[in-house]
Image (cartoon, rainbow, N blue to C red; front, side):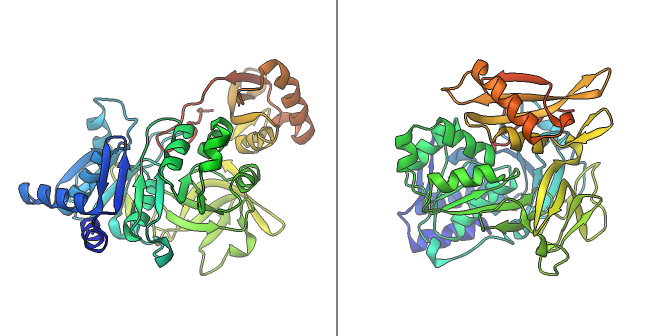
Length: 418
């Protein structure tokens, strides 16, 4: 399926750029010729399961196309996986027959053990948008190839005669690479965009001229949507709700956080709320979990995301697994983070629970500041703003100012266990 897309593009525009990466640049014709050579020189892999550590390189992308063409079930391992742990991750999948065209993606594991979700190239392609207006588009690949969102970017580029721009390093370096290659489409997490806006030189931001900005992987709060709108007024903003398990569920393009309450109970958009948790239809999602983890048999998938209907909008209130329990009260870290991010000079925040013998847990906030701000000047401002905007039990009692945050290869903030 993927190689056929590449061959078709090689016939239509052979010399057009397909991949620009730290390890080289490849045209459509060059990629088609190289993968064809590998397929001819190697035995078929029908019924076999092959792991691929999906780094942000042209070599990994070519290997992915090759394995699909040879009929393997491809297991995509995250690039940040520690050396020597491949067997451990593969063991989580258990044993059993595989089919050509199957792809295994692991859930992010930001708060727990990653689970293997079985997809096919058909399920991964279900929401790919094809348009003549996208011909020749250039896509900055900020998500890992091992992420559902990363494969969506790859498939959008392949289906629309586009180019993939890969990079190593920080969001600022990604922005610089994107500007150098004239990217037209940015797709990243809100965390990536916050770092991009806060740490990129003004001349880099001015030279980035995307026509489309897509946010996914994390909750897109109003603050980051507004900041992107100010920095890139020419771009259309879209935030996507998707997951490894459910696939791409819906997208929002009205510039507002959350999604319209009218979408609930709609036949066109299978979304429900049960006990404050969002449930979504699984029609376009995974076939099921592999190994010890099994999906239920219902038509709806419990996402673990907490939501609240506020007027005509459904707003996200964090993950059920991340709730903090303070003296019997439930605190959603995402709400505390959203409020603290309103304070000018705050780049990123991670809120979690810290053990307390008296209260059970206390709210702990780790804060990354812009280079021109200091903890001494910001501590009082943050406390005052939190006290004004949050309930008493939500106000952080522990503050830690950090130089960086650990992020996954796809730009998500790694969460603390609470």
